[in-house]
Image 1 (cartoon, rainbow, N blue to C red):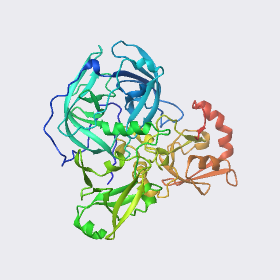
Image 2 (cartoon, rainbow, N blue to C red):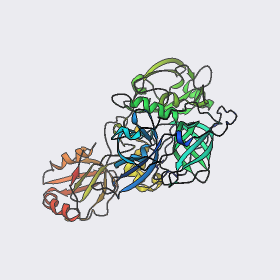
Image 3 (tube, rainbow, N blue to C red):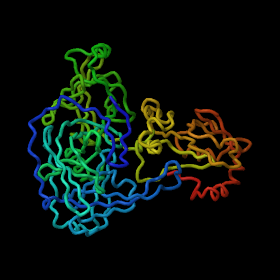
Image 4 (cartoon, rainbow, N blue to C red):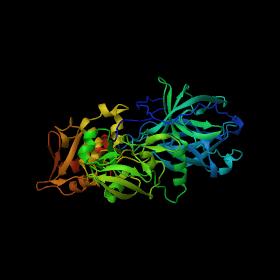
Length: 503
């Protein structure tokens, strides 16, 4: 079962909308975790950068600056959230106790898990700071301490109780990841973009999001951090794995009957499959019931019994406990007949989606033709409408993003849109058009922005370019001789550095 909703982190103080999972194994609350400031290996991380403007894809937005508190790890690396360094131009580390500063570079970044590693240009900068170890044994009922710095450099410690451990979606809204939910009263400070959480002076997690109204904090837990660090040791970082299927619980006896399930009730019903992903390649089909993965039996709610957390959603077996390239054994019922499928997990990169879920650290592509601005649809473009983009962005585009797997099962393409029109002599009558989905140019189906650029080189008889769209007016025509004659003036009038960026 997939849930789609916006999880942007413009600041860390965002409202949580996830429900609280139940059925977790609890233990008596432990004592407040001891924190010894002199033994904590933390550094300030200062970032400046500029995000790209998807409404005006030829330019960037205003510069920004962010401050955070990074956790010093082994091999001279510092762990921060990926949101901190997204679209960065310059990263700097600062010793909290002395104010000494050093330029740093981003080594590995994973926007799906919201984690990144940076290191100083001179690793001696971190001398004297013992690497933090990971606390991998956190359970419901434990107490964690959130660490922040006052402007004076003094350590501010806020204690909180772990109330739930569950699977949730992270800001990139790709897959589900293990998450700690913590009840905590925390104040905002200017270095609060990345906040380490410790348990007995070991790193238990990083702040993911915080809701000051409910005083609930979600954290990226140490097991996800450990997975990220292990994968980062490989020659080519592959990211977190996925099987590539959507599912629904089998609590409904009528659904189990429809699926032909026999024997003990349990498992999840496969509702859709992502193209070219491991589940499809292994032979999984819509209508199958996945009853277990490895030796872990899946119940009717989609949970398995974890030795540390108790009942938790089975997706944890895929995203947290396995790596890209691992093979997991799926026990499946198909029309009541049991079968085994060996699924070799892989990571699905953002570029492999029809509508990419994120496009960070790279300039958006565009193509200007006689004032018509063509772009490829992405969630980054939709997020230009703000945190409420699911409601405020053009609903046709939201629909294409939401159901891209079902609408484009073949994959291997992009959705090209006519985003807006710059008034020009060649587009008189078109200047109010915007947010159109391009289907064909000169009668040929368009699957990428490059298709539009190639078609523009070969106008129809009479020198016209015919553009067909899903929405009204359904068809537009451009006189390519006039477009070509006015191109230089168009570029100068609107201050465009170039009329196209196709890569």
